[in-house]
Length: 158
Image (tube, rainbow, N blue to C red; front, side, top):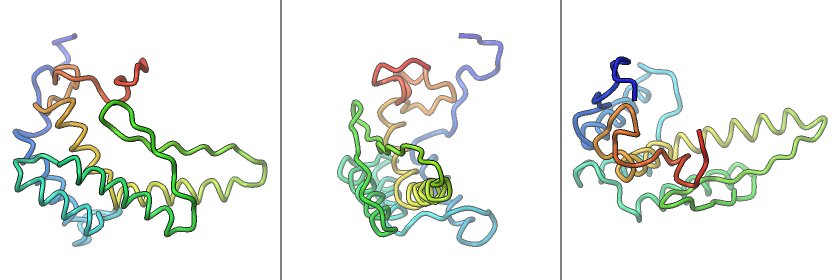
């Protein structure tokens, strides 16, 4: 590791609780119009508030509920629920979109809807849950956290 880059030992928050509170604060700024973005759903906010009460830890049941809410959001937008694959302890949506000439607008709409559902229903819960398992000390450099980034847990190389 290159210790001259100024990142070694730096953390994104002092605790998991502080990190969860930051996510809730940013969402409130979104709701108040102080930031431009998609706010979290009431479901995701409730999960993060439960996590805050539990020392910043998202339960497995809440993690699974966030993913179920994301899939339902996709269904509510008129799509089939995306298949979900488990990689280690974590889930990943497995969209398969074969590009078809003349379908670019439809594919773009799907990407937009997927992003909106992910942000509103599960993105922050997913991030907290993955951090608590792979980087519970919240190091900016995940390799210091004692776990591998989710992308490497399936054997992928960065």
